[in-house]
Image (cartoon, rainbow, N blue to C red):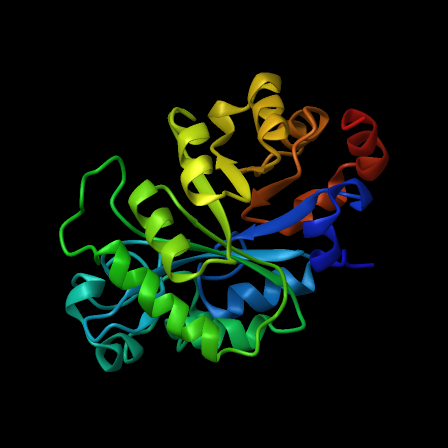
Length: 272
């Protein structure tokens, strides 16, 4: 049975198993950040889909990981220099496998419509990391405002976390969406998390697996935050992280969880 993600977000002691995030959808089995990958993630039992948000040249939030469309479509160029119409003409599936030919880059609005009633979402808002703005990256305030507009129009009411590596983006999101659940991504350290939590009121930490330690899990607990590690594609590593007592994992293949016997019991024991 799927976790009630609303209930889990408010009452963490009642969560009976770790949350299963599909990283860019079930990206080991379908082209990342497409509706095909999201459908596969739901089929495999993911509780939530993690995906990435950029703005098109005309200010529409679209679901892509990279600053450019080069790697995951048949087009070229920076996302921020292409209009939505230009992005929608691109094939976002054939690079992965011929059977996915014709998959398109979804908009945030389409992603919310798909996920409504099916799964939670973790939207990573792309922005400058450590104060360095990437070429053509949208101003985080513009990205936050655009995402907020879409969310206010949407009928999506399931579990939603908005995350970023950028403190600037997180503060902009907090200003635009006072009640949103916000997550801080980290790949090198968790320095500054206490200060940012005081300023922005975080919901979760999303560290890379290289930062996994009992001390960092305790830090999250002390601050009242969830902690979700990424990206975990090995069952032995998944078991080790869950026994640290984290709240969930992000994986490219949600079927990973089926290969960990006694997962819920061992995880609950580690959190006592």
